[in-house]
Amino acid sequence: MKAMITLLPGDGIGPEVVDAAQAMLEAVAERFGHTFKMEAHPIGGAAIDLTGNPLPEETLNACREADAVILGAVGGPKWDDPTAAVRPEQGLLGLRKGLGLFANLRPVQPHPTLLNASPLRPERLENVNLLVVRELTGGIYFGEPRFRRTVNGEEQAVDTMAYTESEVRRVARLAFQLAGKRQGKVTSVDKANVLESSRLWRQTVTQVAEEYPDIALEHLLVDAAAMHLLTRPGTFDVMVTANLFGDILTDEASVLTGSMGNLPSASLGEGTNRFGKPRGLYEPIHGSAPDIAGKGIANPIGTILSTAMMLRHSLGLDDEATAVEAAVDAVLNAGHRTADIARPGESPLNTREMTEKLIERLS
Image (tube, helix red, strand yellow):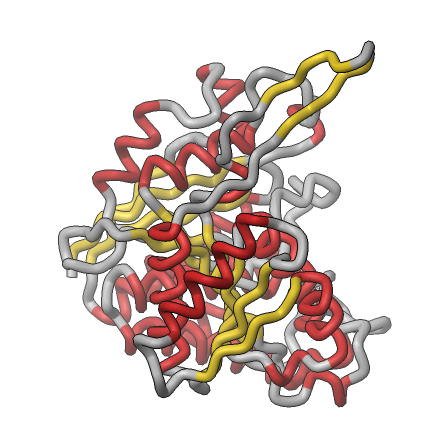
C-alpha cells in the first residue's frame, strides 16, 4: 500500500508524540512492505505564530488530500486568553468541520498490569471495555447564535445547544453498528429532563434503535452516567452522546486507565479516501500538557494506539493494527513505564526510550 498521511504536531507535547507515531509508522511500513508518505503541517498555536491563523488553508487542503491525519495536540499558556479573537482550539474545531468528522471514537480498556495506576479500586475495573462515541460537529460548540450583550447594566453571554434529527441519527447509527461488533449494547447519554435538544436526541436515538432489534438500548442522564462511569464502568459497552457531554465524560473515563497518556481516539466522517475508507483524524486524548512539554517524558502510547486505529479504520490494515496493539501490550506486560504510569521506586522511560521499546516489540 502507498498511503498519504498528514501529520499535525501542534503544540505542547504534540510534536514529541507525533514524532513517536511517525517512527512507529516507518517501522510498520518496513515490516509489512508499505510506503507511507508523511508530511507535517502547522495547526493551533504553532500555526498562529507562523501565519496568524490556527488552521491555515494549506494545512486544511493537505488534510483533505491525505488518506488519514494524525494530530498531536493544540493549545497552551501562550495562547490561553479566552477573550482573544484567534485561539488554537479554533483550528481543531475548524478541522473537524472542514473534514466533516461527525463522530469521535474513544475506546477505554484498562491494561491488566496498570490497574493499580487508577485511583479506583482494581475490582471496579474488572471487565471494563467500553467505547464512547461522541457527536463532534454539532451541539453547543457549533450552535448559533452565540454572542455577548448588555442586559440590565451587566454583561451576558449566550451559547446555543442545537441538534437536528439527521445529526443525531447518523451518530446513533454508527454507535449501533459498532455495538453489533462488540457486546451488543448502546447507552445513550443526554439531559432530557431539562434540555429540549436532549429530548430530541432521546427521541431520535429511540427511533434508530428500532432498526437494530438485536442491540440493547438504555438511556441515562449525563449526571447519572458520570456517576456510573466510576461506580459500575464494567456495565458499559458503547456509549453515544452529544458533543459537550462526550468531551467531559471521556476525560473522566480516562481515569479508569490510570493515565490520559494511554488513550487513543479516532474522528470519522462520511467522506472517504482513495481506498474507500473513512478519511479519519487520529489523536491521543491527553491534550498539549504544557507542564511537561519539551522535557522528553511524554507518554507516546495514546498516540501510537491512535496510529493503530488509523491503520484499521482508514487504511484497512487490520494485521498491522493488531501488531501495533500487540507491541503496546507486550511492552506494558514487560513492566516498561513512562513517568505518568510508573509506580514509586520504578525507573520510568522517556518518550524516545518507550518508543524504541515499542518498535523493538513490533519487530
